[in-house]
Length: 191
Image (cartoon, rainbow, N blue to C red; front, side):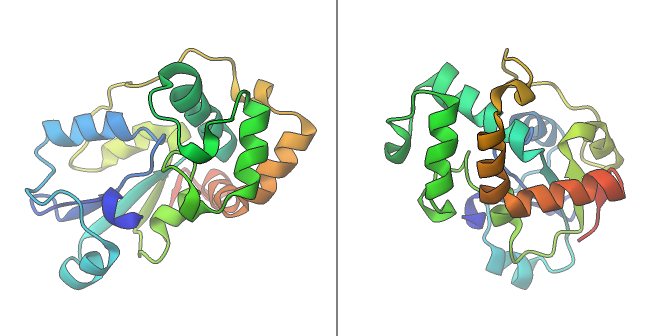
């Protein structure tokens, strides 16, 4: 999983670990503009630890409730281009959450995988909060982020009932713990 989402830059001596639905397209646009990427593009976790041990590694974490609504809106409601086979029967946000609750990360499309799965076993130097994307401007490879891929939808809290909140709390427990840590400790943390 991680192999597809780790992007190194020899120029900046950094690695960005991309997590879908966490401003990835906006970040890609800005990093390309600043010549961040190298020819090989993605690398796996073993390569990171062997070939790039001193590179600064960063990622962005998003509120899991908001990320799930965003993924639902993007993948199922708006795009409807590729719906993973194990989600083809999904007809509502409620049926999505109930389905996701039963499926492990290794059987899910990248948009619905737990965020911690992308950074598991990596020594991430900094985790940025999606709610404070302007903090990314402290990085030498990011000046300003364009707002790309936003959807026109109601606030994420309006999608949730008590039942759905409980299911998401259990399914994305580690994501919630990490998000709450960044939210309450500071705008970003070092892992």
